[in-house]
Image 1: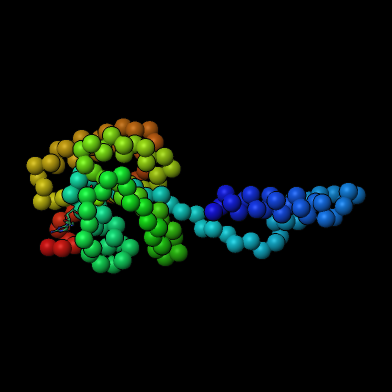
Image 2: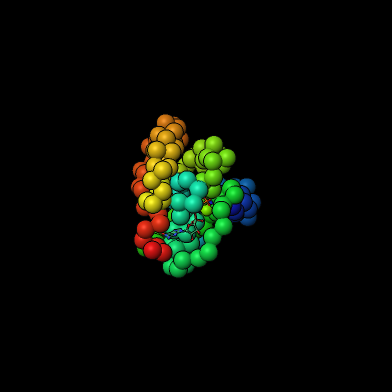
Length: 157
Ligand SMILES: Nc1nc2c(ncn2[C@@H]2O[C@H](COP(=O)(O)OP(=O)(O)OP(=O)(O)O)[C@@H](O)[C@H]2O)c(=O)[nH]1
Ligand SMILES: [Mg+2]
């Protein structure tokens, strides 16, 4: 939307240049004084974790404030959530083993990472740790703050 807005503004500026004639100087600053809806910036958040950790459940709990029935995510779910006028674009990424190698395609422009860990799935804690280390080793993700959220303990039980 911001990109479209920028294009529209550019078109507006060039049309105004035509209207004021050849003798008047074309001033792009003139267009900047016009009211123009400003799109608030969106902060990209990715939600990662092993399959069945509870990522989609947490995403839809955020969105609808209720626990919804989920299916295993193939690919990703994306939803916009607004908290105190701040817009977050939440990417919930499928955690099945075959999908984990695609996580890195979501890292670019990510500002926050939420790592969901099923606190009852102790057998796979080491796997979660390995995935976290892989993620932090990736240059596009290593600087984003990571928060861990325990799944399967607070929402439904
Ligand atoms: N008891 C309990 N079950 C939960 C909780 N959170 C999620 N579940 C259940 O765990 C299952 C998997 O939840 P999802 O949110 O789909 O898991 P996911 O991490 O998105 O899984 P993938 O999409 O496969 O990566 C579902 O049957 C949920 O109902 C919780 O806090 N407590
Ligand atoms: Mg899911």
